[in-house]
Image 1: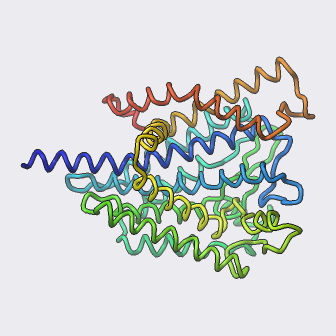
Image 2 (image 1 turned 90 degrees about the vertical axis):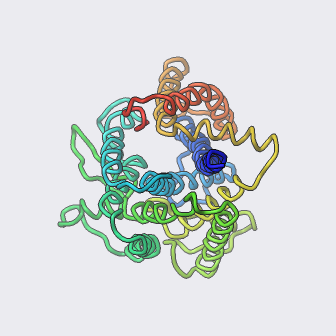
Length: 391
């Protein structure tokens, strides 16, 4: 009887982790589309928030889909940290692992990731890996606090940071560098030899990782699947209803108000046109609300097709950092070869003429990277090499 119970617990654990990995895998594929866009459609670059009068709907919705990625990455990083701190047998501190992993990710950001985007180190863009790394370091410092304090701090940051928008510093003022890292994207350094730009101000992301950590008990072994799904659905719907209220009446949570446009389609685009740098409250409510619905759906949907889709997503989601680095260097290689063969056909850029080509290139690249990513995910699970776990 004990062995049967243990087997049931192991099966439930695998089911829980599978839904998390599948969620990661989905946003990795959406991220792939966005990065292909940034490689081969950069001549049609979008602003933040987007200019709906200058952005065609197909491009707008492609970019909108990518808004799901960063909040999901950061939230699930916090949730995974809770799972690390609360294994099936006993408890352990996540602080050390978070600190080492955060520093490792920061090192990757300024080395391999920076080079993969530009093929040089003249400009270092501190992007999503920077935000994840700093958020992990912040969580390492705070994770020993009582859970209710972590929840309060996370909610205050996520809901309150939009009120800080009027606070600004000039380049010459004391506090500019710190505020640039925390809330206002900009250059930390500009020189002939090196530029450092913060693309992802970290304060809101610290709030998101704290909320993810606080959500960890939803995936505890003591939590039944039915109760977890009920909580996921309630939190997701609550986030989206709050978004409708705040955004619908232009109350709070976004810098630019929405307005009625010439068509219902443009009005919808304007309504959902949120700021990402830093992520507004409305941006986060939409992304985390959708994430909750998808996590709920991943556990609810059954059947042969659903099982196959889940296996596909899990293969990408079980080795996210490996896939992240691999796809960036594949895109760098593809772009370099394309420039050598066809030259730069859109001013300073090589690019395709329609967003449809971005979707097609993304699908081809996803198929090409499926095998290596699946192999590495299996290798990571089987190996005893500790450094591999960081990937």
